[in-house]
Image (cartoon, rainbow, N blue to C red):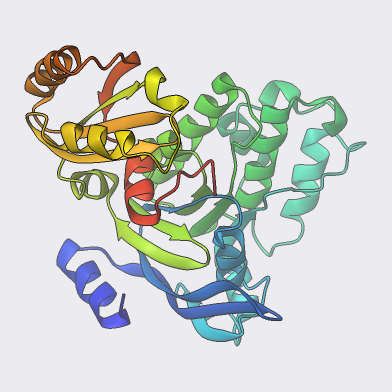
Amino acid sequence: MSESVNAAAARHEGGEPVIRAVGLEKRYGSFTAVDRVTFDVRKGEVFGLLGPNGAGKTTTMEMMEGLRRPDGGSAFVAGYDTQKELKKVKQVIGVQLQSTSLFDLLKVKEIVRMYASFYPSSVPIQPLLQDMILEEKKNDRVKHLSGGQKQRLAIALALVNDPQVIFLDEPTTGLDPQARRTLWDIILKLKARGKTIVLSTHYMDEAHVLCDRICLMDRGKVIALDTPERLVRSLHSDSAVEFRLPQLEAAPPEGGERDRVLGLLRGVCGVKRVEAREEVYVLYTDQLQSTLTDWIALAEKNGLRFADLRTRSATLEDVFIHMTGRSLRES
């Protein structure tokens, strides 16, 4: 994906690039962690880096934050070169790291006040704690906070200097569903205030809900970059039908029965594509009712017993599997 294409896309969509990553590379010996990554992030958007663990998301973010020097390429934040103007970059960004070390014995208000002292100017502490739903915890010591509260505190610390750009690295990993939803609401409120947010995640639902655009990464490379809706539409299928075929699970992989069944599935009404994922078969279609009716009739005619049948909308996971041949969880 060339720099000129990205720039043209940004102008066409009416967005002003506030971050530019141009051919970023990071190598560790013979291993390439980030391989010529290029993209723009527009002012005021939530930009998602989505991919499995080890895809290069965190390393890419750290090079944009100026925390890690690239072996090739360059990154610019608010017009500042992260290698040559790091001091200025630090003034305009806020960073929540994947694992933030906090001072457990300090009180919440004390640690926020301490971080605020690192900057020439900072936001008022009480409204910040209110925004992060931490005002009632301001006199509690950090070690007594729950996992979700610690994550909200880490985001509060990233916001004390009122940054233009906020980097959130896997902010909801390990949190329970309620705590994740609370953080989602906070991120959407930050976006509503005009903040530019770069978010890394391996949760598809999170990326779909929060992100204006998603940069899908795998093995250090950008494999797709678009809005969640366009990425899913690229499958040319609105829906998916999933099921197991127990009678084939014990069949030898070199046998011809699986190939025969796959041929039958490709002929089901409305099916655009068929995928076999271990023991699960997936039919992609934009004619869900016709596909279901025809598949059930075909299964009965050919003596195929199916189990765990379900229908669903196509997802970003399907996009990733289509492009890489494996799921985010397997990677």
